[in-house]
Amino acid sequence: MLRNFLRVIGGCWLGLGCMAVLAQSVAPVYPTRAITLIVPFSASTGPDIMARMIGPRLSERWGQGVVVDNRPGASGNIGAEALARARPDGHTLMIHASTLTITPALYRNLPYDVARDFAPITKLSSGSFVLAVNPNSLPVSNMAEFVSLVRASPGRYHYSTPGNATPHHLGMELIKQRLGLDIVHVPYKGAAPAVTDLVGGQVEMMLSLAHTILPQARGGKLRMIGITGRNRSPLVPEAATFREQGQSFMEDLDSWYGLFAPAGTPPELIARIGNEVKAILALPESREQLARQGMVVNTNTPEELSASIRSDLQRWAKLIGDAKIKAD
Image 1 (cartoon, rainbow, N blue to C red):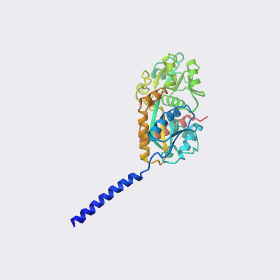
Image 2: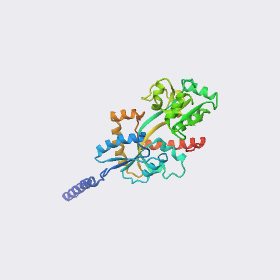
Image 3: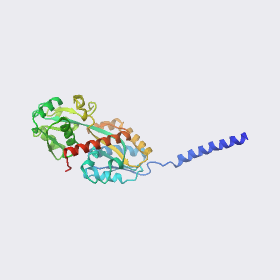
Image 4: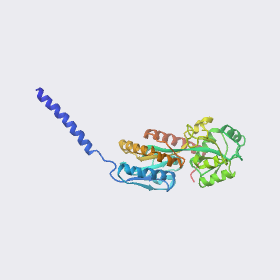
C-alpha cells in the first residue's frame, strides 16, 4: 500500500512539473510584431524627440520594429483617442505630455476618458518652470519682493505666455490665485515671441520652462526668482525653488512626458515595458540628450503616475473653472 501511495504522489509531482513546462511553452510571446508608438504632436516636439530616442533602443532589445506614429491636432486629442481605441495587447503605446491632464477641463465631449481609457506605465522625464522677470521693469530678486511690489499695484503688470490655456498660463493663474495678485495675461503664439517681448520690456514677467529662458537669464537680460520642484533643478542649481521661499503649492508643477498603453493591457506587459524603458532612460547618453532639451529623467510606477494624473485633473479643472479659462 505504501508503494502505491508513493507512486501516486510521484505521479502528481510529475504532472505538476509537466503542467509548469506546458504553461511556459504556451505563455504569450511579446512582442510578436512591430510596436506603434503614438505621439499626439508634430515632429520635433518634446514627445516626438523622446519617442525617437526610445524607439530604436526598444527595437534593439525586442527584435521588433518600433514605428513612431505622429498624430497631431486638437491639443493632442486625436492621438489620445487613437490609443483609447487600440487593442490592449502592448503593441500600441503612446507618449503624451502633462497637458493630458488639462484638456478634459477645456474640451467638452472628449472621445476618451483620461482616468478610464489609459493604462499609465511610467513617467519619463520632467522639466521645471521658472518665474522670470525683466530686471529693468520689475526690479525684484526673490518671491517676497515680487509679491510685495506686484500686490501694491493691481493690474499694472503683465505676464506673457505661449498661448491661452497652456501650462504656462495655468501656472501663472495659480500663482495669482494663491497669492492674491492681479496681473494681466498677454498670450502670444508660441514661446519665442513671448520671451522676446519679455526681454524687450513689453511685458514684465513670464512663467517659462527653465531651458527656454536660461541663456537670457545667465546673460543678465532676465532674472529667475523662483523655480518649481521640491528640490533645486540640477540643470538650474542657481535658481531658488518656490518651496524654499514659502510657496509650496508650486513644488509639483512641472512639464512631464509619460508612457501609456490602452486600458486593459495585462499588468505583466505594463511591468515589462516599464522596466525596459527605464533601463533605456538610465543610460548616460539618454540623460545627456534629454538635458539638452531641458528635461531630467524622472520615472515612477504606474500607480504613482496614475495618482499624479488624478490629482492634476482635479487641480486644473478647479483652476480653469474658477478663472473662467477657455480654449482658443
